[in-house]
Image 1 (cartoon, rainbow, N blue to C red):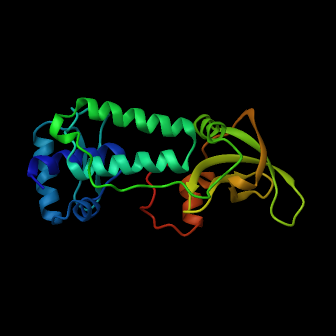
Image 2: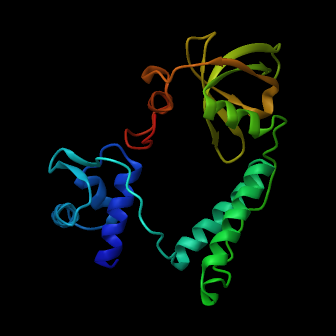
Length: 229
């Protein structure tokens, strides 16, 4: 990787995280921590608003907008594969959005970069669900409580009030990660077992103990697996 590209990547990582250590950056950029320290120092001297210090971590003082960077062929392959997966395994709205985004990217690329990359495909298979993603995605974004009519095989149905946190795909089924108000704990619900849902007007506060980070930690995910709340 060219040094200019590495500097750009450092800033991109800092934009997407609250606090980033030199070790974390070194592992992802495949360079030494000494190189990261030098790069961060040079970025600070050039005026990039980075705060922090060695051994603690770095963050950006405020939002920083950067000019777009040309995609290389592997990046384009990853984007196209992601669009294939969105089209095959998510809802129609996300599929259309992914294809639209790729069309915009292709429209801005020079002709020799528009050729198809390696044919990595994501064919659809039996991962069906009766509940549309759209209401759940909107409820997650707006932090609205959702009421679910849920039924496990061989058991009577029940209604749960939940605070939705994320939609996760495990390779065969989509699940909703949520804070269950009935159980007073984190739970996950398979979408193919949700018979109906109602998004309520009631909003919930993003409390740390009920957050997606807490859900993932309870599920045994490593500490750096998720950088949001």
